Image 1: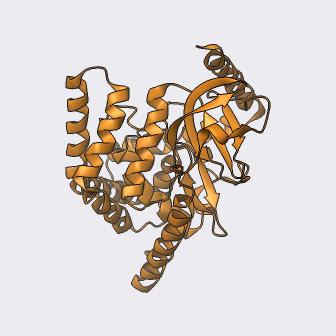
Image 2: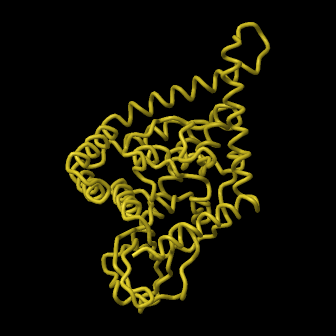
Image 3: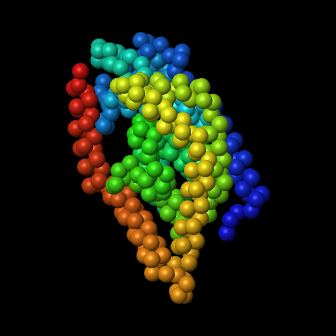
Length: 340
């Protein structure tokens, strides 16, 4: 059963209030006035991971993190922050800066240190999320698709504030498909790495939760209205790092602006497909002859796919999954730390 209009309006006000509060809180940590040369290294070694992270501190005691990595991936975080900032949505400020690490100048991504509990994360079962969390993640899908960022597994969302408001803390895979990823609930960054919306939409179409899809369309409308001049400026900054030729940069800019222009109609089509799939699942639970074999098979495959995603997620969080992932990260991190 869909929530009443009054409860819908109340939820929307709640999300908007929390959005504004977190947007202002994170935006107050802007980096423009930070003197990189004055930052000192807090720990003698980088945190392990695929991209080495160094904790730094200013003379005033403010803490920051410096992430090393592929320049295009680091620049992706910068452009993602700039575009979300244009839309007045919470994100962690990010700038490319040069900082002295172990007596050597290292160029990387500087971000303010945000205190959050990495052990506190969204579970795979979205029925355990709060109504606020479900609808924030629903609205986030518009940004994920616009920023072409499929790497959005549940562990990448910090749950901030007393209500556990989900905020994506890692956008380095933004524009990973050069602005051409498909709009589908099945689209993922890696076959073995489910995204948070994998679970959200599966629970919706299978009838375990209700969603107000109008909130998703409203967020798509917000993105469509982003100012073109500022948007193009931010995209050009990223393209100059990501692409070698002017032709490639122009093609990328055109692709993303086209995506922005049609984002509302794309998400209306997507919402209709979700509703149709939800009705199909509902019909498939019946035993009458009005449900065809093809429809039952389609529903069965989608349900099987969902169970496979839960299995992959459970494995990735297991001891064996963590061991394999940490070993791979350590190898990648060693390559980055030893590269010139």
